[in-house]
Each structure stands twice: as structure tokens, then as C-alpha cells.
Image (cartoon, rainbow, N blue to C red; front, side, top):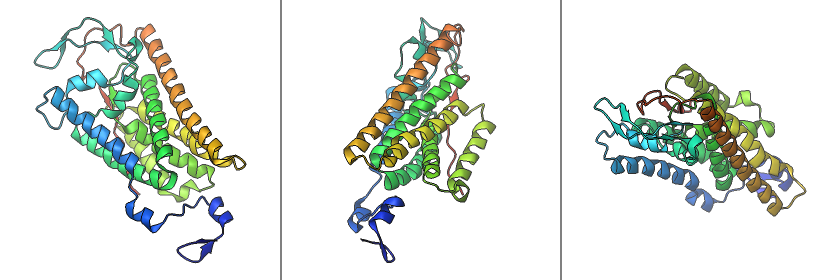
Length: 300
């Protein structure tokens, strides 16, 4: 029997209800390490961009940082800007369709400004802490990156010519994963506050679609829901398998989803480039048509 806060739980009940038995020492020292590391990377990337490109405006991210690391299928490479911020010359085209696949990852760690960064980091801390406490760091990280790449895929499908930046695709993925895992465990979603949070964020997303990447948010949400089932629910259903086998399935599922989303993103970007989307256009300001993803704060 396992001692509980009130009475005792049998081992079978603990396993059935997916209850985590945490020691007092674990409660005292446990920290959402993975979440804090991800937050630190986002913050360091933003500060680094401000320093490297010597940006004087503390509230707005350097246009160079956005153009060099943001997500888009293909746009003219920037050579110089005039006083209004308009590109006055370019030599070739850049983007995912032109071999810059790293943008699928880097865009998820670049933000449009300090307010954009602060909002996303706030939501990431809240959701990430819940994830790590309930599901562990490894699962949280796998779902986060699978959702990030799914958000990149969604952004390229919906708006391949727009520059998309922000961690909100991955954050929406954490929401989607929590929903799918709760549903798989038989939790009535209408009795949870999470469903209301997701609906509210989607309303904000579509309502501010001129400034927010609908594709990144919806793609991340769907990708996260799939990742939750593959990375968490599938191994848990393998009751006869040992711990090592379940771990292999978890890792294979997480890495496999990342590869699938990356491959699909490259395919979509190349298709957009072949059709002349973005690539066939003339010079444009790196801030025009910019799509910035912001996950609204969890409420309710």
C-alpha cells in the first residue's frame, strides 16, 4: 500500500489513476528545469540579437534578427534599408525553400519585442510547470519541439510569404497535448478550465489574424495533440511492455514526429517557391506582412 494524504491507496489504484507519488524532498527541490532552460534560451536569443545588431529600441526586436532567423518560404535577401525601413536592394532569395531549413527551429526562439517575449514566457512557465510535474521533463521537451515544428508547418501552409516568429506554436502544442492526454485518460474536458483557455486563445488568434499567425497556432495545437497521444498515451497503454520498451516507443514517437513535421514543412515551402509565392516578388520591407504569434494568457 502507498501512504496518501488521506488514508492509503493500493498499488493498482495508483497505477490506474496515474497518480504520481512524490516525496517531501522532491517537493522541496523539484523545479521545472526544462521549462526554465527553454525560457532562458528564448531570453538569451532576444538579448543576443539586440546586442549583435546594436538595437537601441529596447521594446522592439532588431529587423535583422527577424529577417535572418524568422520563418518564411522564400523572400528577397536584404542588403540595405533606407530611412523608412524599406529594402533598397537584394542579390538573391532566402528562406526554407532555398535551403535555410534552420528557420523551422530558430523562428520558435525569436520574438518581435520584449512584450511579445514576456507574454509567451509567462504562458510557457505556467504550462511547462504543469507538464513537468505531471508528465516529466523528457515528455515535456519532446512534445514542445514536436509542437514547434508542427507550428512551423502550419505557418508555412497558411502564410508562406509572411515572416513568422515566436514560441506560441510550441505553447499551443502543450495545450493540445494536455487536451488529448486528458481525453485519452477519460477526463471530461468540459469540467476542466483548459478547454476554455484553448477556445479563448483561438478566438484571440482568429480575431487578430492580421497580427497573429493562425497557421502556427492551429498547427501547433494539432501537432501537440498528436504528440500527446504518441509520446504519452501510446506508451502508457503498453501494459505488458517493460519500462525500457516504453521509453524507446516514447523517444521514437517524439523524434519521428519531429522528422515528419520538418519534412512536410520543407515540402510545403518548396511547393510555395515553385509556384512563385513570395520568391517571384520584388523587394519588400522585412516588417511588412510580418506575422507574430502570441499565445494569450491562461485564464479561467
